[in-house]
Length: 73
Image: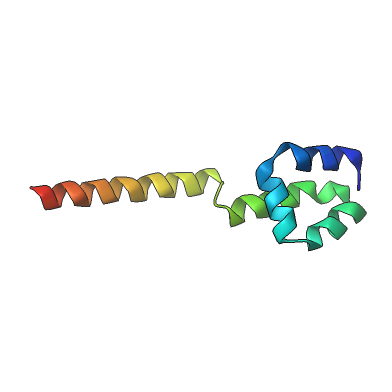
């Protein structure tokens, strides 16, 4: 595997966890290091780390607080 890819993987705990859970990426990144961005995109989708996921999570939390406050009234 390319040293640059190895350093990127070691620098982020989410990358390390995801590549351990999905070992096919070892082979893929070893053969095609340029697919690292695909790896990152897939990891962010799986762990819900995309900006849209964060917005949806905040909206659901606000809805929960709104429901809780309406019950207290």
